[in-house]
Image (cartoon, rainbow, N blue to C red; front, side):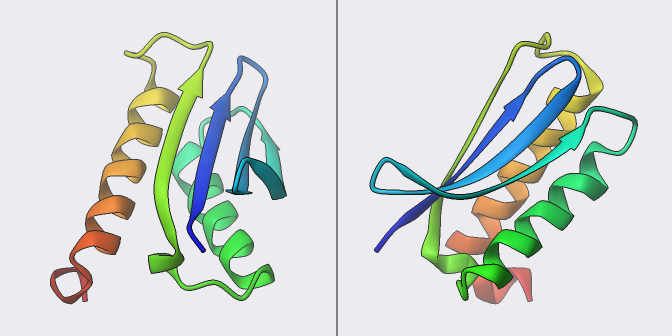
Length: 95
């Protein structure tokens, strides 16, 4: 079964949800600050661990937000998304 990470970035908080077949399985939420990268990687690890999933089982990563695309949090989120999807698509390269 394929899962999706859905990251929603708002002005004051962000939330990463693990979605399966259109339903939210679990979410991690944090206040918006100067630590998007750390908080996002922690949320990814937590959602994978608590649901006994391997990274390859999460085949899609969606980022949406109400912040401008050029904002630091949006840029960091898009970078994490690209690195994650690359690592899942080419696991031997990421090792």
